[in-house]
Image 1: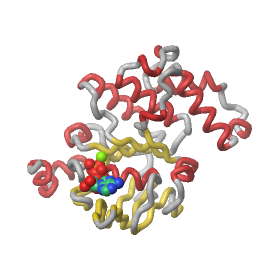
Image 2 (image 1 turned 180 degrees about the vertical axis):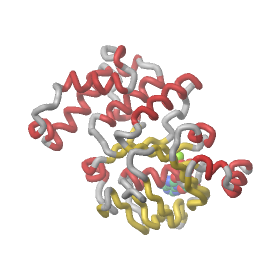
Image 3 (image 1 turned 90 degrees about the vertical axis):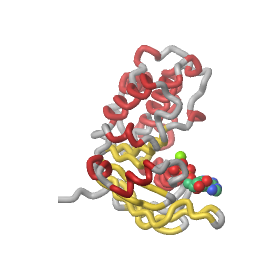
Image 4 (image 1 turned 45 degrees about the horizontal axis):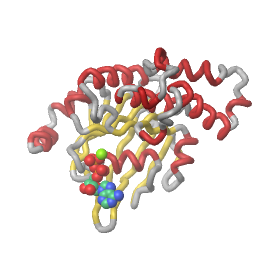
Length: 247
Ligand code: ADP
Ligand code: MG
């Protein structure tokens, strides 16, 4: 029995001037799973990420979220629908504490959508902020300034900020870029913990890294979908092997 996808792209294409960065890509993302979009540099991964997050609209095709056509809506509407993206360094306030950063994100979410009033049973801002910091492993760093955190911890804080909006779908573009092996391992553990309650889509060019944690893998190459399936399907796919060996 197939489950309804949480997000689905239907034959999306994206052109920049005369250049087609993405061509006719149809992908269904299953809810509660970790799906990774992989492909060599320039494959169109970030372009695809931006279409899913509403940063820009496709030149052709559609984006459906929980069955609803959200093509062409603004990024704000994508966020409101329950889609969050992580890894915008600019989301952090370096001279505010770790907890203050999450509180600000919670406050923005609460006032924008009036959720605070509707859900009388929600914990206070600081309490919920601490819960989110615990989830991302920053419980002991609440009082540190954001700029004092190590690189990997700043990235974890960005995830806590994204989680403040209580998203159904969390999108991450190369979450371990620039990380040490140890930081990478910690980030991978964190991502694994987030999946289930939420759907996570990871965009990544390091094939090895996603093999162990992903439930579904989508492979892009030169803007085209060349394979999708389980890690085992992808590992055994001749076209994928050729693309990655040829790097
Ligand atoms: P990836 O994330 O897989 O490395 P991108 O989606 O960033 O790939 O880019 C795919 C292709 O589209 C690349 O050739 C890139 O140069 C081009 N591209 C991406 N964004 C733009 C843009 N805003 N204007 C022009 N070309 C772009
Ligand atoms: Mg990219």
